[in-house]
Length: 248
Image (cartoon, rainbow, N blue to C red; front, side, top):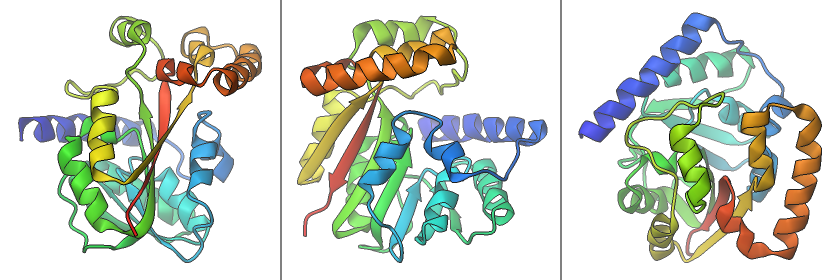
């Protein structure tokens, strides 16, 4: 409970800072899908969501929920932070889409069994107890349903040192969150019959420090070539995309 209270307080503070700064509410799909290299390919894993019931798991600012609703999905979104839920509601209204919002804990979802065809989450699982979160996630996912999550990965020792010690833009972390490791992956594999993992940003993770747009495309090209030819290098990537399929 101390962990949950700490997480709630942290993210409510973050939401208040965004509200005070007057962050714009309207945006295009590409603003979200292309803000990190893994988002668009991860979204593609969901397939055609038109007419499907989709859960935005830990919706944060609500941008993914809006993009999903624009694609024709029937979207439900939740977050632990009431501040984020209010921001996400305002963003959905500003972009003229309907989304059902709920304030909830990802380890104890308030939804009925087999409620959703698809689940989307970004930078959320590494905040949670995955044994509990994975079980409730499987419960609300329909048989044969699909969940896609984008998560920081903790397989690179040098990157882990940099995460702890180096300052860089957007470095906001709660005291208890940790990048996913093989242990958490094994917990998910014990719950879901099919778990796929794909790594993103090997060399290109340097963009966080270099802040040079000229280097982004060459670094992305190098990553694509290396990860295709030497797949085991994925374990050293900054982020991973997890695709979880429920049993039929």
